[in-house]
Length: 160
Image 1: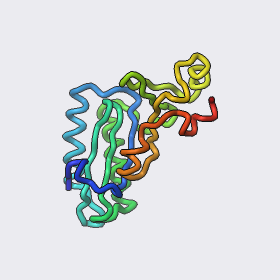
Image 2: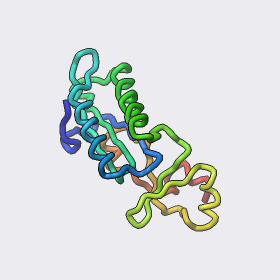
Image 3: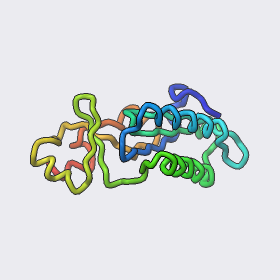
């Protein structure tokens, strides 16, 4: 069952999917409608899951489930991944490409591939303090506090 994202407890589990390209307003609206429907029907072994999502920066889909209400099972998690894969096919997107790293500068998201990061650091495009997205956070609490962090506080620190 879909609930507003801000109604989820801080312990709710999250998954973050980063698109390989920015979503258009029409794509974001259509994807939002599809994810609302998905959340309304999402269940684990027949038990409804209190869940939500957000589309942020026209590039990230954040899906969350309140496991204090009902636990997400392997099959239910697989169904959410399948939903993302369906969106990929329908909109010619890639939410699974881990070779792209997103950064935030001047309230704008820019993306670099892993192979270009050392050069961008040398050019000064990316610094220790450049904000980056930690898409590995696992709870709403860590999403709120550790999703957008300085590059020096992530695995990227090896480049500085």
